[in-house]
Figure: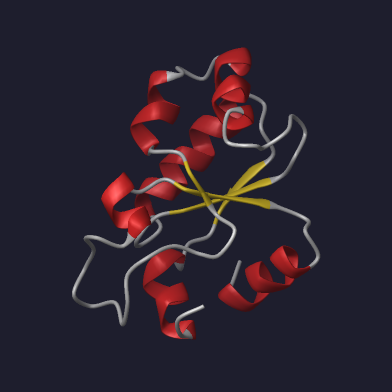
Length: 117
């Protein structure tokens, strides 16, 4: 999935976007100097990878976690981080719990080059 594809899915409200980085990365108070700016994809919700991991792949626990962030059961989820590694693990854990989840491999490193939103 490319940034343009994700932007189109967001425009059509076809996915929920989950930022699995640290809270500080999500807020933009910390990040990587290689990125033009810090923050998160507009509309993304923050669910730290550690929280997903702690849910242990258990369907009900994962959905409680997502629903607490406003993501209803059955919604397709796109996970991202900084470079696609943490989000690939998150997507794998979410799929193991029965979530229709995919990774956005370009993640923040790619999205931040689209310009501040």
